[in-house]
Image: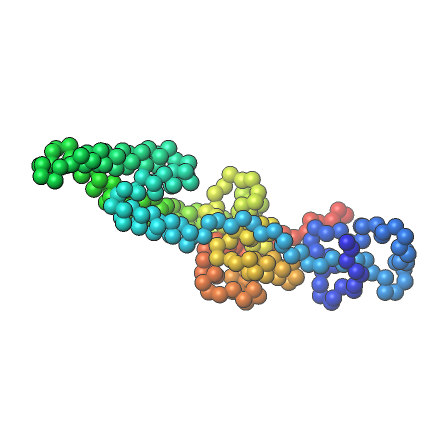
Length: 278
Protein backbone atom coordinates (compact mmCIF):
# COMPACT_ATOMS: atom_id res chain seq x y z
CA UNK A 1 0.00 0.00 0.00
CA UNK A 2 1.40 3.39 -0.98
CA UNK A 3 0.36 6.82 0.19
CA UNK A 4 -0.89 9.31 -2.39
CA UNK A 5 1.30 12.22 -3.28
CA UNK A 6 0.41 15.49 -1.60
CA UNK A 7 2.17 18.81 -1.20
CA UNK A 8 4.02 19.49 2.03
CA UNK A 9 2.07 21.91 4.29
CA UNK A 10 3.97 25.12 5.06
CA UNK A 11 6.06 24.87 8.21
CA UNK A 12 6.16 21.09 8.24
CA UNK A 13 9.41 19.15 7.90
CA UNK A 14 10.07 17.47 4.59
CA UNK A 15 9.58 13.98 5.98
CA UNK A 16 9.17 12.20 9.31
CA UNK A 17 12.39 11.23 11.05
CA UNK A 18 13.68 7.86 10.00
CA UNK A 19 11.60 7.74 6.77
CA UNK A 20 13.25 7.99 3.36
CA UNK A 21 11.20 9.99 0.89
CA UNK A 22 10.89 8.90 -2.70
CA UNK A 23 12.99 5.75 -2.34
CA UNK A 24 10.19 3.28 -3.11
CA UNK A 25 10.06 2.35 -6.80
CA UNK A 26 6.72 2.88 -8.57
CA UNK A 27 4.58 -0.18 -9.12
CA UNK A 28 4.90 -2.04 -12.40
CA UNK A 29 2.83 -0.59 -15.20
CA UNK A 30 2.33 2.82 -13.58
CA UNK A 31 3.15 5.88 -15.70
CA UNK A 32 6.34 7.69 -14.84
CA UNK A 33 5.95 11.10 -13.25
CA UNK A 34 8.41 13.65 -14.55
CA UNK A 35 10.16 15.27 -11.65
CA UNK A 36 11.02 18.45 -13.52
CA UNK A 37 7.43 19.52 -14.16
CA UNK A 38 5.52 21.73 -11.75
CA UNK A 39 3.27 19.90 -9.36
CA UNK A 40 5.37 16.75 -9.26
CA UNK A 41 6.22 15.95 -5.66
CA UNK A 42 7.63 12.91 -3.90
CA UNK A 43 5.22 10.86 -1.83
CA UNK A 44 4.80 12.19 1.67
CA UNK A 45 4.24 9.71 4.46
CA UNK A 46 1.98 10.60 7.39
CA UNK A 47 3.42 11.56 10.77
CA UNK A 48 4.74 8.67 12.86
CA UNK A 49 1.86 7.51 15.01
CA UNK A 50 2.96 4.84 17.50
CA UNK A 51 1.04 1.69 16.69
CA UNK A 52 2.41 -0.49 19.46
CA UNK A 53 2.53 0.93 22.92
CA UNK A 54 5.15 -0.28 25.39
CA UNK A 55 3.99 -2.90 27.85
CA UNK A 56 2.40 -1.36 30.90
CA UNK A 57 3.03 -2.49 34.40
CA UNK A 58 0.35 -4.09 36.51
CA UNK A 59 -2.04 -1.35 37.67
CA UNK A 60 -2.00 -0.35 41.27
CA UNK A 61 -5.63 -1.24 41.79
CA UNK A 62 -4.87 -4.86 40.95
CA UNK A 63 -2.26 -5.08 43.70
CA UNK A 64 -4.60 -3.40 46.19
CA UNK A 65 -7.46 -5.71 45.22
CA UNK A 66 -5.27 -8.77 45.69
CA UNK A 67 -4.20 -7.62 49.15
CA UNK A 68 -7.78 -6.89 50.21
CA UNK A 69 -9.07 -10.25 48.97
CA UNK A 70 -6.21 -12.08 50.67
CA UNK A 71 -6.89 -10.33 53.96
CA UNK A 72 -10.60 -11.09 53.71
CA UNK A 73 -9.95 -14.76 52.99
CA UNK A 74 -7.52 -15.11 55.92
CA UNK A 75 -9.69 -13.27 58.46
CA UNK A 76 -13.16 -14.50 57.53
CA UNK A 77 -12.01 -18.14 57.39
CA UNK A 78 -10.44 -17.86 60.86
CA UNK A 79 -7.06 -18.88 59.40
CA UNK A 80 -8.23 -22.01 57.59
CA UNK A 81 -7.57 -20.47 54.15
CA UNK A 82 -4.40 -18.56 55.00
CA UNK A 83 -2.22 -21.27 53.50
CA UNK A 84 -4.15 -21.04 50.23
CA UNK A 85 -3.60 -17.27 50.00
CA UNK A 86 0.12 -17.74 50.62
CA UNK A 87 0.24 -20.50 48.01
CA UNK A 88 -1.22 -18.16 45.40
CA UNK A 89 1.38 -15.49 46.25
CA UNK A 90 4.15 -18.12 46.10
CA UNK A 91 3.07 -19.31 42.66
CA UNK A 92 2.77 -15.77 41.35
CA UNK A 93 6.15 -14.59 42.64
CA UNK A 94 7.92 -17.95 42.43
CA UNK A 95 9.19 -17.54 45.98
CA UNK A 96 10.33 -20.57 47.92
CA UNK A 97 10.11 -18.62 51.19
CA UNK A 98 6.43 -17.92 50.64
CA UNK A 99 5.93 -21.56 49.66
CA UNK A 100 7.51 -22.65 52.94
CA UNK A 101 5.29 -20.25 54.89
CA UNK A 102 2.19 -21.62 53.13
CA UNK A 103 3.23 -25.16 54.09
CA UNK A 104 3.64 -24.08 57.74
CA UNK A 105 0.16 -22.52 57.83
CA UNK A 106 -1.28 -25.67 56.26
CA UNK A 107 0.44 -27.79 58.92
CA UNK A 108 -1.12 -25.64 61.66
CA UNK A 109 -4.60 -26.11 60.18
CA UNK A 110 -4.13 -29.86 59.75
CA UNK A 111 -2.84 -30.14 63.32
CA UNK A 112 -5.90 -28.29 64.64
CA UNK A 113 -8.30 -30.51 62.71
CA UNK A 114 -6.50 -33.68 63.83
CA UNK A 115 -6.44 -32.60 67.49
CA UNK A 116 -10.14 -31.73 67.66
CA UNK A 117 -11.43 -34.52 65.41
CA UNK A 118 -12.26 -36.85 68.34
CA UNK A 119 -12.92 -34.15 70.94
CA UNK A 120 -15.36 -35.14 73.66
CA UNK A 121 -17.56 -32.27 74.82
CA UNK A 122 -17.40 -33.39 78.45
CA UNK A 123 -13.67 -34.11 78.56
CA UNK A 124 -11.12 -31.48 79.47
CA UNK A 125 -8.91 -30.09 76.74
CA UNK A 126 -5.45 -31.60 76.69
CA UNK A 127 -2.22 -29.70 76.21
CA UNK A 128 -2.03 -30.87 72.62
CA UNK A 129 -5.48 -29.50 71.87
CA UNK A 130 -4.65 -26.16 73.48
CA UNK A 131 -1.45 -26.00 71.51
CA UNK A 132 -3.29 -26.71 68.26
CA UNK A 133 -5.80 -23.99 69.13
CA UNK A 134 -2.93 -21.57 69.63
CA UNK A 135 -1.51 -22.63 66.27
CA UNK A 136 -4.81 -21.86 64.58
CA UNK A 137 -4.73 -18.41 66.17
CA UNK A 138 -1.28 -17.88 64.69
CA UNK A 139 -2.59 -18.94 61.27
CA UNK A 140 -5.52 -16.55 61.71
CA UNK A 141 -4.03 -13.31 63.02
CA UNK A 142 -0.40 -13.90 62.09
CA UNK A 143 -1.39 -15.05 58.64
CA UNK A 144 -3.49 -11.91 58.08
CA UNK A 145 -0.52 -9.76 59.05
CA UNK A 146 1.71 -11.82 56.76
CA UNK A 147 -0.66 -11.28 53.81
CA UNK A 148 -0.64 -7.53 54.48
CA UNK A 149 3.15 -7.40 54.53
CA UNK A 150 3.34 -9.26 51.23
CA UNK A 151 2.23 -6.03 49.57
CA UNK A 152 5.49 -4.45 48.41
CA UNK A 153 4.29 -0.93 49.11
CA UNK A 154 3.29 -1.81 52.67
CA UNK A 155 6.58 -3.61 53.22
CA UNK A 156 8.55 -0.67 51.89
CA UNK A 157 6.72 1.75 54.20
CA UNK A 158 7.08 -0.47 57.28
CA UNK A 159 10.79 -1.13 56.77
CA UNK A 160 11.61 2.36 55.50
CA UNK A 161 13.21 1.00 52.34
CA UNK A 162 10.88 2.93 50.08
CA UNK A 163 11.65 6.31 51.63
CA UNK A 164 15.42 5.64 51.66
CA UNK A 165 15.37 4.49 48.05
CA UNK A 166 13.38 7.55 46.97
CA UNK A 167 15.77 9.87 48.80
CA UNK A 168 18.81 8.22 47.20
CA UNK A 169 17.29 8.59 43.76
CA UNK A 170 16.51 12.24 44.42
CA UNK A 171 20.13 12.92 45.44
CA UNK A 172 21.40 11.21 42.29
CA UNK A 173 19.12 13.33 40.14
CA UNK A 174 20.36 16.52 41.79
CA UNK A 175 23.96 15.50 41.16
CA UNK A 176 23.19 14.79 37.51
CA UNK A 177 21.50 18.18 37.09
CA UNK A 178 24.52 19.85 38.67
CA UNK A 179 26.80 18.15 36.15
CA UNK A 180 24.59 19.21 33.27
CA UNK A 181 24.68 22.82 34.44
CA UNK A 182 28.41 23.12 35.14
CA UNK A 183 29.81 20.52 32.72
CA UNK A 184 27.68 20.37 29.56
CA UNK A 185 30.00 17.75 28.06
CA UNK A 186 28.75 15.28 30.69
CA UNK A 187 25.57 15.03 28.67
CA UNK A 188 27.35 12.99 26.03
CA UNK A 189 30.14 11.48 28.12
CA UNK A 190 27.85 10.10 30.85
CA UNK A 191 24.70 9.82 28.69
CA UNK A 192 22.56 11.60 31.25
CA UNK A 193 18.86 11.27 30.60
CA UNK A 194 19.29 8.39 28.15
CA UNK A 195 18.11 5.16 29.80
CA UNK A 196 17.93 3.60 26.33
CA UNK A 197 21.73 3.71 25.94
CA UNK A 198 24.31 1.54 27.76
CA UNK A 199 26.00 3.51 30.52
CA UNK A 200 27.64 3.17 33.92
CA UNK A 201 26.61 6.51 35.47
CA UNK A 202 23.45 6.49 37.60
CA UNK A 203 21.53 9.72 37.07
CA UNK A 204 18.65 8.77 39.37
CA UNK A 205 16.24 8.03 36.55
CA UNK A 206 16.39 11.29 34.57
CA UNK A 207 14.87 11.24 31.09
CA UNK A 208 15.77 13.71 28.35
CA UNK A 209 12.39 14.11 26.69
CA UNK A 210 13.89 15.65 23.57
CA UNK A 211 16.32 12.80 22.89
CA UNK A 212 14.85 9.49 24.08
CA UNK A 213 13.00 7.24 21.60
CA UNK A 214 9.28 6.66 21.68
CA UNK A 215 9.21 3.48 23.86
CA UNK A 216 10.97 5.32 26.69
CA UNK A 217 8.34 8.06 26.63
CA UNK A 218 5.70 5.38 27.00
CA UNK A 219 7.17 4.37 30.37
CA UNK A 220 6.67 7.82 31.92
CA UNK A 221 4.44 7.62 35.01
CA UNK A 222 0.90 8.88 34.68
CA UNK A 223 0.76 9.08 30.88
CA UNK A 224 -2.29 7.49 29.29
CA UNK A 225 -2.03 6.04 25.74
CA UNK A 226 -3.66 9.13 24.14
CA UNK A 227 -1.33 11.45 26.05
CA UNK A 228 1.65 9.32 25.06
CA UNK A 229 0.70 9.62 21.40
CA UNK A 230 0.13 13.36 21.78
CA UNK A 231 3.62 13.90 23.22
CA UNK A 232 5.21 11.91 20.38
CA UNK A 233 3.22 13.69 17.69
CA UNK A 234 3.77 17.19 19.07
CA UNK A 235 7.51 16.62 19.47
CA UNK A 236 7.76 15.60 15.83
CA UNK A 237 5.59 18.41 14.50
CA UNK A 238 6.73 21.38 16.59
CA UNK A 239 10.20 20.43 17.69
CA UNK A 240 11.80 19.87 21.09
CA UNK A 241 10.27 20.99 24.36
CA UNK A 242 11.84 23.76 26.40
CA UNK A 243 10.38 23.23 29.87
CA UNK A 244 7.69 21.44 31.83
CA UNK A 245 5.35 24.38 31.32
CA UNK A 246 5.91 24.16 27.57
CA UNK A 247 5.15 20.43 27.61
CA UNK A 248 1.96 20.95 29.65
CA UNK A 249 0.73 23.76 27.40
CA UNK A 250 1.42 22.02 24.11
CA UNK A 251 0.05 18.61 25.12
CA UNK A 252 -2.68 19.81 27.53
CA UNK A 253 -1.41 17.69 30.42
CA UNK A 254 -3.19 18.09 33.78
CA UNK A 255 -1.26 19.07 36.92
CA UNK A 256 -1.63 15.54 38.30
CA UNK A 257 0.57 14.29 35.46
CA UNK A 258 3.08 17.15 35.32
CA UNK A 259 3.74 17.01 39.07
CA UNK A 260 4.87 13.39 38.75
CA UNK A 261 7.04 14.16 35.71
CA UNK A 262 8.73 17.29 37.02
CA UNK A 263 11.27 15.36 39.08
CA UNK A 264 12.50 13.06 36.33
CA UNK A 265 12.32 15.03 33.08
CA UNK A 266 15.04 17.23 31.63
CA UNK A 267 14.68 19.32 28.49
CA UNK A 268 18.08 19.55 26.85
CA UNK A 269 18.41 21.36 23.52
CA UNK A 270 19.29 19.21 20.53
CA UNK A 271 23.03 19.00 19.84
CA UNK A 272 24.35 21.34 17.14
CA UNK A 273 25.03 19.82 13.73
CA UNK A 274 28.65 18.82 13.07
CA UNK A 275 30.78 21.38 11.31
CA UNK A 276 31.25 20.81 7.62
CA UNK A 277 34.85 20.30 6.41
CA UNK A 278 36.38 23.30 4.74
